[in-house]
Length: 254
Length: 382
Image (cartoon, rainbow over all chains, first blue to last red; front, side, top):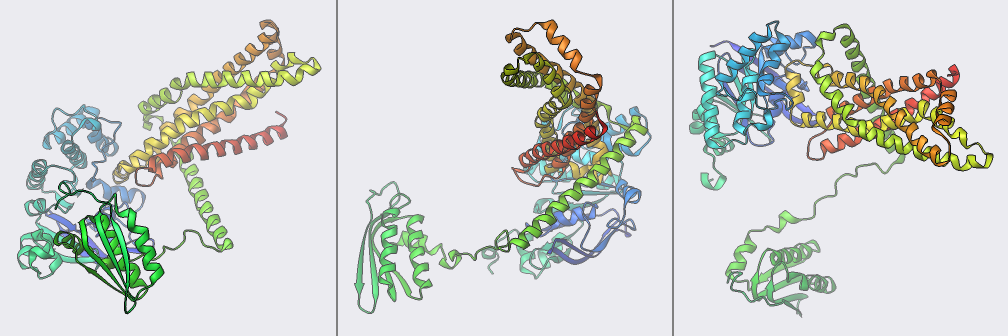
């Protein structure tokens, strides 16, 4: 569990001349549940999108299992992408396909398995996330929680080593959100998948995270790093305290 | 008192000049969203005319004040302080005072003007615009290349194409458009025939309306009219579909699955267009000629005469030359539609903008291509 599976090195993200994240470094260990958090506008979704190879950074590199995803092209890039699964903030299920077809798609693209096998594997994935019975539904017929689960099933279709989740609890009620947390914990235990999760939901963070990093809009960097409970109890930085205790300046008495 | 208790009384303003260049504004009555307007301009005018060193707002006689009234007080303060004077508020009731304390006038100073969007310098603006247009053109050239490669791959590996998608799109693009294609072309044929019959009457040449119609229709009008209608119908639909996928992060999802959206989404639509548009054009031509027939009947010609004229004037080459153009129109409609969708920005108007762009650019490109073909055919003598 101790080896590092993702390395972010001297990473800077910018839109044109506007720097969002300035020169950060961190690693993610194999098998851990790693959370990237911060206030609105601090660049956490941007960081995640760079880590999954959607954008090229202004500077620096991101190594996924030793391969630099920021510089890979063509087949090299596809090889790296095969080992990661992504669940987007909006679910991003393909609206013109059923739930089952959505999960089957990555398997069809990358394997030579027969249609029957792919069908079965996809059904098993949907079973893992508790969506048995919803295979033939269209994404527009699903509730918010079901969309997130289906997206997670699709992200897991090829049994990737790493799962990247962008705001998995966004728009969900507290109960559904807690259920999704439990699902993530269960998957981590049984499959040993490494999770990289972007969220700002405190409850989920305390439930799930083994380690967190906190990004800050003003410094454009990492302002805190470690276990969430430790940071809550020991951090001396006001903004970190405010975040983990979910309090304003007045409530903290400062 | 709260709003339920108050008896709304129109406010009144009394402006008193005191010694040491002091202006005291005594406000009496109710200051709420509906009544503050009554004294707003007068109070600002009093301030402007007097230009006092000190402004005192006396609010002892204000019986009710909400945020609109506070806005007046804040406005007076900002103006007074901007001209270098001092400002004081007296006599506010406890409730009004609590509300007043919520707002710090420093937060409402006039913001700096943003940089203008376009430079005043005309040459600089022209340069920037040319650069933007060039960047657009580059994107289209690259996309044309990707679509061409995609089509070649489709021919070489037909089993890799998503045929279900091709058939679904063909139905929407082609079969479902039959009625509108028939209607539009029927009317265009009718109008063209009618308008040309009028001047031809002078030469007793009305029978040649049929010749004019079939030549113009097969070579130009049929392909263009059909393509324009389909562009408005399906080109915008493609843009909206892909634009929605972009906004929904579905295109990102394809990207991180290592799937290129061009062969996955665009090529099936291009193939469907290539199959359907020539067929639709043939139908369009037919209905255009039926429109002409109606006019010929009204002029007293028989069906036999009409058919004779048509078959004498028209050649198979004319029909084919028109249909060949539709292949290019088909690629433009599907390609431009999909590209506009893939480049949709974020926000509620993004998809609509993409659809509009698709239709407009599609029309322009098709007319340009038609013009180029006109020259080529002329040189080749077709």
